[in-house]
Length: 529
Image (cartoon, rainbow, N blue to C red):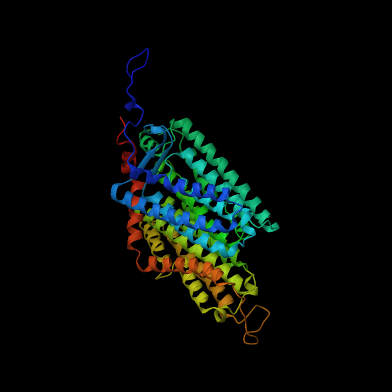
C-alpha cells in the first residue's frame, strides 16, 4: 500500500491479507448462534409460545456445529481465527483446539436437553421472565470461554455467562432464590476480581494475553520472572469458580435454590468452565510455575473430594446432596493439577465430560422424583417411588452408580485413569482419597435410593401400612419434556461406560495438546513472520 508522503507499506507484516477459508468460520459460530437466537427470543418476548422452539432449534444447531468443528479439529489440528484481520498475537483470537471443542460439544449436548426439560419446568406465564433468552446468553458465554484464545476475552466470556446465570438463578422470584443468588453472586464476583487482577499482572509482565503467545514465551523467561504468584492467583480465582476446597461453600448454599432445570444446567456447565480455565492456564500456559504449587494442589484435590463426599452423606435434602457431589467430582478433576501427566490430564478431561452429563441428569431425575412425591426434595418425605415408577428407580440407580464411579458406567474409566496416574507419580495417598471419595459417594447415593425408592412411604409412615400414590406428572407434552432429556442423558452414561474408547481417544489428543503446545502454537503463528 502506498502512502501520500511515504514509502510503500507492507500490510502482510501486520495483517492477514488473504480471505479466511469458509470452513474456519466454524470457530465463531458456537458463539454467534446462541447470541443471535437469544436476541431473536428477546425481540419476540411477547410471543411466549415460540420461545422454546427458538431455543431448542438454536441449541440443536449449536450441537451440530460443535460436532462439525470437533471433526475439523481432529482432522486438521487447532483452528484459529483472528478478528480484524490482525496477525497474532494482535486482535481478538478464537483458537479451537481439541480440549476446548470437547468441552463445548458436551455443554451444547446437555443444554439442548435442558431446554427441552424447561418446557415442563416453566409454564407459559413464567416464560415471560426470560428463561430461554438467559439460557441462550449463557451458552454464548460458555462457548466463548471454551473457544477463546485470549485471556482477557476469557474474562469477558466469564462475565457474559455470569450475567445470564444471575438472571436464571432468581427465576421464580422466591425468597430462597434471592438468598441463594446473593451468595452465588458475591463469591463469583470476588473470583472474577482475582481473575482480572491476575490477568493484569500477567499482561504487565509479558506484554501479551494471547494464549499461544504466552505458551511460547514462558519457557524462555528467566527464573526470577514473577509468575509463580500470578499462577497462584489464577489457581485461587478459578478454584473458587470451580468450587474447590476451601472456597466451595457458596455452591451448596445456592445451587439448591433455583428451579431444578437451572440447577441441572449450572451443575453441568458452570463449575466445568472453572476446571477448564484451571487446566488451560496452569497446564498449557504456566506449567513450570504451576508445578511449584503441585503439592498444595494435591491437598486441595484430596480435601475437595472428601469434603464433598462427606457433605453429600450428611444431607437430607436431595438437591443439597447433589451440590456436594459436584464438589467431590471437582476434586477428582483437580488431581490433574497435582500430577500433570498425560494420563492424569486425560482422566480429568474424560471425568469432566462424564460429570457434565451425569450431574445434569441427576438434577433432572431429582426434579421428576419431587414431582412424583408432591414437590418435596426432603429425603424424609420421599418413599415408595419404586412402586410409583420402576423406570425412574432404574434410571436413578444407573446415575447413582455412574456418579460413584462404579462399572460398567462412564464414571469408572476416568477414576481408573486418575488412580493409575497418581500411583505412577508416587502419590498413593491421593489415589486413596479418590477411592475413599468414591466409596462415600456410593453410600450417599445408595442411601437416597433406599429411602426414596425401596422404602414404602415417608418417614412417618410404616412400611406396608399404606400404598404410595404418585402425583400425576401432567399432560403428555409435559411427560415427554421430562422423560426424553432424562432418558437420553442416562443412555449417554451407559454408552460411555460400555464404549469408552472414542472419548478416551479424544481426551488423550486434548491432553497431549495441553502438555505439548507445539501444535497449538504452530496453528496460531504458523503463517506469521
